Every structure is written in C-alpha cells, then in structure tokens.
Image 1 (spheres, rainbow, N blue to C red):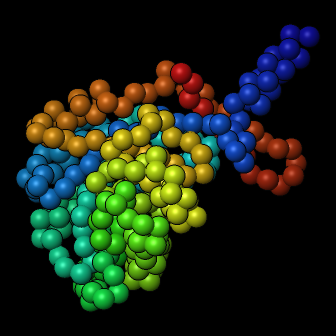
Image 2 (image 1 turned 90 degrees about the vertical axis):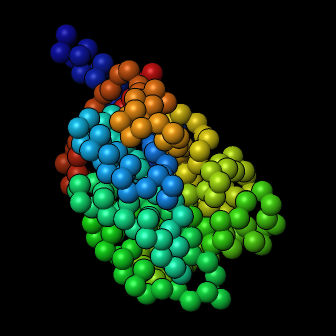
Amino acid sequence: MKKFLAVLVVLSMFFSFIPPVEGSSFECPTPKSLMLHSWYGAKNTKRLAEAIVDKGWVTYTYSQVYDLWDNGQCVPENVILVSLDDFYSVYESKVLSDMADVFVDYGLVMTLGLITRTDSYKQDDKLWEKFKYLEEKGFEIASHSVNHDNPYELDTVYLKQELELSYDMICQNLGTCPETYILPYGIAWDYDRLLAIAKPLYRAVVSIGGPSTYKGDLLILRRISPGTSSPENVIEILENNFFWFDNVKELSFQPGKTGKRKIKFTVFAR
C-alpha cells in the first residue's frame, strides 16, 4: 500500500510540473545577462573574461537558452549571457572585433548584435567570413536591426523592415538565420506592434527592461550594462540583479514502450 501511495505522489508531482507543449505556463529565471559596447574596450573585456573564469561561470549564447527551453529545461545557475552590440556588416569596428577575439582566446562565447543596413549598402564579404568564423567558435550572430532606429518613431512599414530585412540579410550572407533580435536602445520589449512582427521570425527579443523570468512562444530576455564598475565588480552586480529560484526539481518520464525517447524536465519553483 505504501509503495502504491508513493507511486501516486511521484506521478502527481510529475504531471503537476510537466510543461504543456502549447500555451505553456512553465517559466524560468532570466540568466545573468551583460550588455557590452565598444566603449568597454578589449582591456576591460580581458579582465571580465578572467573574472568569469575565476568565478567558475559558463558563458552561453541566447540560442543555447532556446535549446534548453525546447527540452523543458532552464539555464543552469552558473551561466552568464554576454552580448556585444553594434557590429556592422558594411564596415569593420576594430575595437568590437578585438573584444570578440578576447572571448575566443579564453574559450568563451558571446552573442553579437549585428546591424546590417539595407541593400543600398555594399556588404563586406570579409566581415561575413569573420562572422562565420566566430559562429564556428560557438558565438551567436543576432539581428540588431537594419538602421538602429528608435522603434517607437517608426511606422509599421519601416518597423517591419528593421526586423525582417535584417533577418533576411543575415540568412542570406551568413548561411544561418538569426534567432535573437536585440532591441535598438534596449526599448520596446512590451511594444505589441514590434512583438507581433518579431514573433514569426525570432525566438526572443533582448532588452534592457523586461521581466525577471521568461516564458512563452516569444521569450523576453533582459540584460544590464556594466556601467562604470570594474570588470571584477560586475560579477557581484550581476548576482544582485538576477535572482534564482529556490527549489529545483528534475523529472524524467519514459512514455512506455512506444519507442519515444526519455523526456526530462528541469523545473524551478519560487
């Protein structure tokens, strides 16, 4: 009888926590996420890389977040997402390139926000080769729009171009399509018109604002700037700005002898 009750408890726990495939209410805590720009420089990036390694953290790209989400899992607590904005595909920023190379040297990865411009600009094939190289190193190339315009100042036609044309140009020139849209100026994460355009194309929009958890078909992922803090102090700032759920449960389910693979879910509860 006791064994029978124990089985019922386990099953009830499993079906309580298993996230539905459609319209899931499953949610995850937003991983520690840092936004960098060229002003941060290669020297600070090197110190940051050393601080990340010393802390024992692991760098992920946003695409890796989606891969885990698709398998019903949240990102581990020791993960940090680092994104580096304002790359262009029509001219090179030596500083940004050097900053990305620092992470390559340390065996770390980051997400690069790429501004593509329009077809009227000549795309630089050498830059696209560099982006392909970085992608091979585990980096993610995200769309950061076409012109980096303020989304609130654009009509629907130009807003669609910012999201759709940049998506198409990255697909065409990189050979893989972007999954992440990094919002210019970090705004409009709750702008319904923009989200409706983004949803068919991207897995997430990345913003400065946003909720402390992520869920749904289009994920909203926030990040913070290092500000004027030293790279070593940024570690503490990230820990203070991104909370973690208290309880973690990992549940596995083998659906009989149907030939289907085992399904495993990592569930976080506040």
